[in-house]
Image (cartoon, rainbow over all chains, first blue to last red; front, side, top):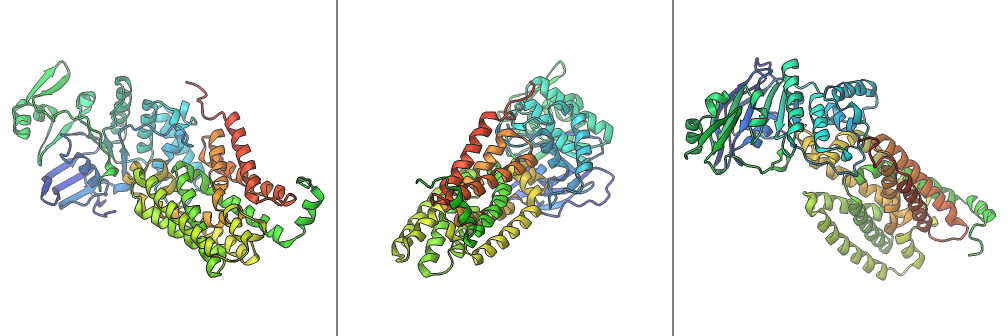
Length: 272
Length: 279
């Protein structure tokens, strides 16, 4: 683990300065300056291999920058992480409340017997906040994907994070559950001023929530409001090919670039 | 076989030191195996436990051949096995094949050692299937000491280990040293396995480590309750198994496995937790 993520009291929730990440000759991004304010919702978009997941790993303190600095308010213990939905094993001996409890003290040494009353209260609050109280004691492997994902949001929020990192949390959820999960995240950032970095390949489900977009393509990037970034001119420049952005009612559709819309899931922990 | 359930013979045998030592050893093992079991099951390591126990057998056979304590040999064999498994199989996907390869070679080596051993043949058999006289008083101290050490380390790493066992990706994101923990846990399992070999023998370690935990997982989804139940089931299996084996004089493991399997069947039949109370 790297100690590069410091918790110097920054005004913003996240501050990247001249950040560069490269593996050998391959530069994922360079000169990246990004300030995320408390309560701000930043969508991170881009094709596979553009370094979205690596950016998450940098913010989690799992990946050192090649150069530049990164600061996360409260240090990486105050970062909540919501992964993409992956079905949990149906035979798992684990209840919903146990999954949520990991977010509170799953990283701490010892068995934690002394603080169990306080722990239980915190977990109950987090379960209630995402409306998961009803199935908190059910075997977690038997819950639906949407129910499991609500528990994952509760798991990320139970530690009272100042920064919430969401890595494709809506992937493989149906529309109704996508709505539930994104509303939960939205409510949290408005109520508690938690900054949200939301990696996604599909901006439309969260478009009403997005304050700014960080769009990464082949080492190039653009930061701005959706209206600034999600235009034919900007994306054509980023992709270096003719890309057309079409707005249909409240939705944005990107046409033309082959890899604009990628569906390949990826995991923060799977990379070396 | 006419003295199969000869109670007076059982009581007579209980007067012997070596029988009581065996019972103490069994009780200690029940606690260790019961506490480790649910984590082993969660991590899908049943085959790894089996592989480790086969290498404990190899170590025990080597010790028999060179004339040192079987317990030390078994301990060395299974710790080496655990380290190999932990270091060679860094991904879950190739763990099975790595275990298969190491297990086969270790077993072959063990057979060679036993073939070369010219001592009492009961010693050979006992290594595989467990026997009452295999636990001496020095072994008992080794067993108790090693068990306390295993439990102390387990208590220290329990929470992050449990987290990593359920969801390695999120645990990694939260800064849990997932790889290190998996090697440490493999060593703990290795030590517990080596200790079990002396009581139930190398072939049937699973009956103490896996079966009680699998049974517990059938009746509750709470990790704490499952762990308590696994300890209770392991204790019943090992103590009842030893008592039942006294009068007929059959290897301990026959009864231990029978009792633990019976408990498993009952839990499977009546386990209510594996279906949701409401939809």
